[in-house]
Length: 273
Image 1: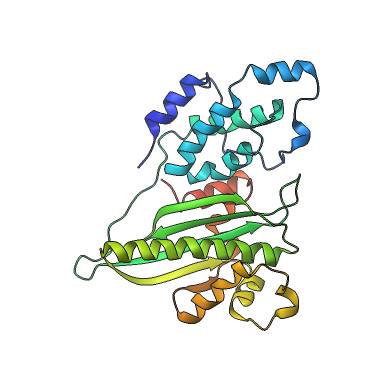
Image 2: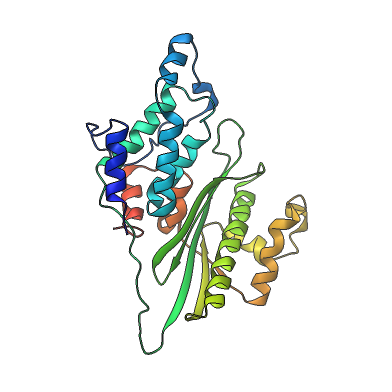
């Protein structure tokens, strides 16, 4: 599944067909912020002449359907639609430049590995970037859910609260991912299509994993909103498992931050083709 024709149409609509392709949708050396808003009348007039809101909305449509690789970059851009500056517009152009070189990229939906004993295996990758939002110091959650090796849902989202540690940020992200996994599980069971063989969430923070398994860590977690602790009940009930995965293999990492080309391209190869 891909959106080649849609992306080519966007490139023409926003006059981006002459951009030189780049390796990643976001610059790992630049953190967008409200301080990049227009500083003078000339910049305000310039931004009034560019279709920032429309372009970000168009990119968001692609990110939600077949392009998890641009989800984080577009999520960042959407935070500044009320008062974007020239630097934000340059970031929009970079996403278009990336898309220009990857119009054929998409996701593949695979069939069960065995037709005689069909089953579904749900695997989710979950990650967080601690306090990476410059303006609020909130963390970014990211997850991607695979069914039989095919990506079916993903999200990059700024957390609603300020986490006090990387473990807390990862724990909040883990809870959000768990809700998505449980929703997918319930939907598949309601459709009664195939049996669910295994449900696994892969997390690269041991502190978050221990916090989800051990309710006795009261002093370190008593300030965390009770809504995030529901994950303990589901783990105890065996609804899913949470396992550790090395950060280098954490596919949700690109949904929480801008990566360098080698890391980004390596992880992308396991998600898209």
